[in-house]
Image 1 (cartoon, rainbow, N blue to C red):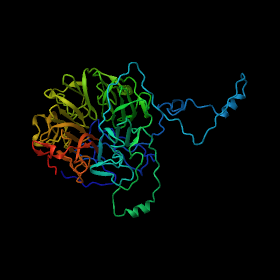
Image 2 (image 1 turned 60 degrees about the vertical axis):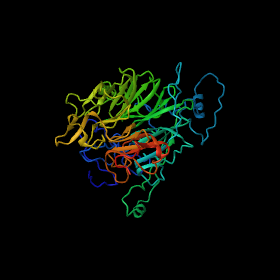
Image 3 (image 1 turned 90 degrees about the vertical axis):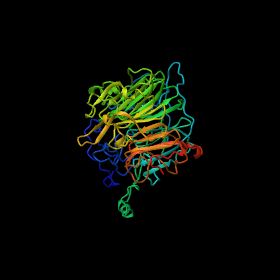
Image 4 (image 1 turned 30 degrees about the horizontal axis):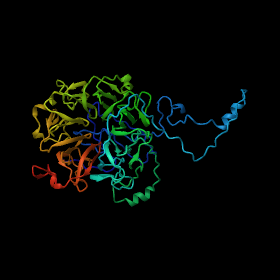
Length: 587
């Protein structure tokens, strides 16, 4: 599909669709402490820095927020007593002793003041260690080390390639040089809207990307050095590329999360737009960052606006799996119980959240579903699969992304499924994985079929229009198809084992470790090369970096993607029905 010429300067977004969701945009002052020559950041939920045309889903824009290095725990009280960084064991000063000696008081043994060293380091924050009776291990950490490949647009440090890399945009998968398997040894990857976290073989967490609300869990304050603008303009007079702009070296390079206790054993991680979470082997959960809503920052908890360090979440135990939407979290325990918390404005928490008491949604709360074996989250909607194979859905449903047709109301702005409801159209399948993007969803069956449904006007579903079932397709006033409510099998694919959904693009991994991408591709997040075009149907990601890899992970952010895996077995074994596993036009 033809597109208007794209500018490499600040992108221009087309008018957003009139939905309750896409109004989640906010402009804030730009901060110098995070480091870049002034730049514009987009909300990860909305994805692309360069939005699709008006008839396609339009990413929300969000200006770079002010740095939050010294954010108090409570928005109402930022006195030192309530600041996590206060050293409660500090000795009183000599001056305070002299002042207090002026008043009459009983004789005391003289105190000896300790010298204060100018170069003494402040006491570092360390999160508390979980304490409970009969703590048992409920999950183990993977031991399989992976190569990590990144691609897409990385002008906000999303690719983690470091400040020296000239490639702010990577059109095909590129190996991240900071994560070698022999030393770092990544065993899990989690992708948020504009940041990424990896878990190493020895339980360390490394993060990179946007740190506006401390989603990276570490201090990335940095002052950009002064630049001679006249000289820079002269040096780049023949180029309109902004790749030479300085970026924060701390945000753009993988670095360790600060404040997790050495005694805990982290076995799994997850990322939302502005939050990162870590699960211990005993099922406790640490988190840092914050949640956002349509008014801006909602908060981390009822008494914390932003968690600048890892915080041990109360009321959660025996957690084995976490799935994150844009600003809500689903946590599954080893007993099949689901907890939900975060922003509930679109009913994605499975319970009603009244506007005047919306902070109550920040408390992890169990709700009615029992014997759940898997959970999955879209941007603003949620799924759960129970032990009987039934799929439940709730949350925003204006494009049928829940797979439920609400008696003709689907398609109206802001329409939602208010509580967990069985998706009857999935009853004939055994679902092993389910997830979603902003307005579409995808699921994998036990026999390797890939199902998609929801919004399709940016090719999110990977299905040609002529292959859609007309009885389940909803058209706009111009007669163009907008979305389908019925989960539909994506044709011409080998057996699929995993799928990941970005805002408007997707990546699926097949049983042979090959990756296929489709959907909105203007920011190269589909990894199909320099054309930067939308991909209509699942197409093999084929380049020299990944050709000999057996991929086992895919994650999709707003305008970038990550895949990971191990060196593949010999090519002759990577065949399907005697033919090389090259599909849908790959070369």
